[in-house]
Image (cartoon, rainbow, N blue to C red; front, side, top):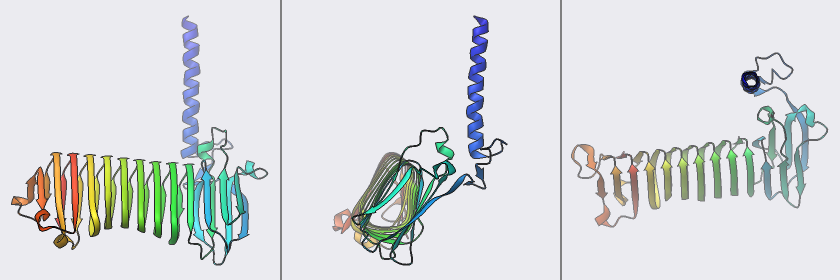
Length: 325
């Protein structure tokens, strides 16, 4: 019996050692095995050009992507060409798992699942060059991978869903934007939209500027917006909210279960009202009739003066700080 236990322990140790070796290979590339140099200087060195396809895209209306593990980048062409470049493992030279089709004004890019333990180090990347005047609709569904908009873009609609990955946006002007991320980050320089919806299960949203009407809902993560114009709702179960309010078009409701709220009012104090409540925490502000900037657990400002819009903030466990610049 003792011999069997020793054998079982040895087998377990071998399995653990193998798993550790795979992780080390995937992050450092220090092994001398054939796949030991997969990563160099933060890039996947075993990725090669699989294909470079070009289409005439003057009538392009929709880009529809469904990827399992490839990163996705968007650029613009200098003309009406659509160009799709795919980098992946050399084993896909003859049979790529990423397929590109262009038909009926729609560009479709799909990726099959690869049944391999090396998915996490396969390093696929899809680079899309859109026609210079493209401004209609992009929708995408990515299981595990990043989406990066390298250039400013104008659209009618943007709809993205990621299970695990990050989204990076420069400047975007869009009528409707809907982004859902299970695990990852959303970061943007400037989002100008009519209506927006951002949903995150675990991750942060960071924007230098956000304009529009809509909702930001986060289970676990922080919301950080330097300049906010619009109205709607920000709701978080666990996370902090740091926002600079420049202009309100409607009421702004901020609700947190666990976390702190920091609001800077940028030249808008004259036409807004404030209704702040905390269950466990405190409220501090530099405006209103507040002694030593501390308002306790309840604060009302401008409510009786019939303000154009109201900022409602509630926290179950956390502090509220609101300052007028």
